[in-house]
Length: 135
Image (cartoon, rainbow, N blue to C red; front, side, top):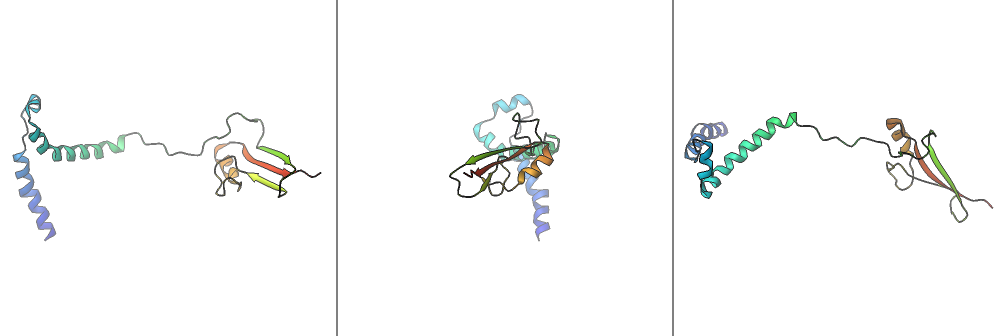
């Protein structure tokens, strides 16, 4: 039943549809088409455009997926890892580490995601460590 319907569409209805289309014999003939002629051509032109796109799509340049890239471009590049420690007197906990690689699953708190990031990219970013100043 389904195959018969598809067969009927391809063998009978599609050729009948194409015969009724106002296709000009020359390129200049397209300029003489009326608005209603263009509207009748739109479904065919849309399908042809889609097929053309699908045909050339494998050859189009691929959008680059954002890979891990360097975050630290110029700060302390001579160090293997940039870690800053700041002593703060009013800190409630003894140490708090804040993420600077933007990869942490617990952002803004560091979860050491920078280690994997640094291995993948060769970057040297590390956390900001706030330490409670002991008086």
